[in-house]
Image (cartoon, rainbow, N blue to C red; front, side, top):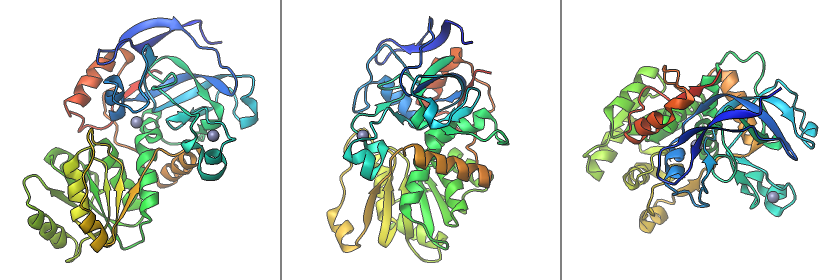
Length: 355
Ligand SMILES: [Zn+2]
Ligand SMILES: [Zn+2]
């Protein structure tokens, strides 16, 4: 039986540090299940949510966190038909509470439903000992998984987001993909891209992150683009890629410069996949897009089906995100936020480990 009270990190005011407090353990209603959080990781989006910069707007008081591995404690009244049992270890994407009835749910994907809530933004998240989750969004982690909860946790936002990007890039064996920005998301993208059979060029403006992916063996080539003029940039890419521009560029960095870089290194008919979200609009050169017949494609956190496919792929290939060796506690959350804000996350994804 779950206790009646739990420890939670609460956003009480936008732009302010989170406050650790005892609050009641929630009751699972409708399709939801009560879960005990085993591991929850900090995502870069959490920083923008705290600042109130996410489109739909976070409304304090709010428990943040949308990337976790949890264990089911209790099923809500309508949860049983989703095949879950008490004791199952699960994760899920950012989205939940879709309606299953609208055009988007039926014909495009539940992640496009206008009724969805976003964990840790418009519904309660994982920076607490317990929370509830929509059973329809859950992906069960096999009991024989060799990975730790800390290794699995970042798959549920960072992993599935770049999974979606790589799926939409439609890479063929022998193609070259540039991963522009190799922080948290980009580091995982290099691993997935390599497993997809592509040649991987990691691009960043920080040597530390480039050295990290080079040492990890997931980048065939690395390039620091800091200070390179456009002609120098494409020249360096051709040197690294048998004289050719790249077939696809996945931009994980949320900066306009990263988008300029990605666009300028594509071959004709090349694909630019937008993942990172800059705070301001990204201007694009329509002439370049038209003359080179480029494709600009958006990536999005997938729904339950895409998440399940990504989790299966990670298990089968043994690919897991790089996790910070420090075992963070819930009380460390504001320090984690400060470290991520300062860009000091080269040691891998920071994960709170509850038990
Ligand atoms: Zn995220
Ligand atoms: Zn719907």
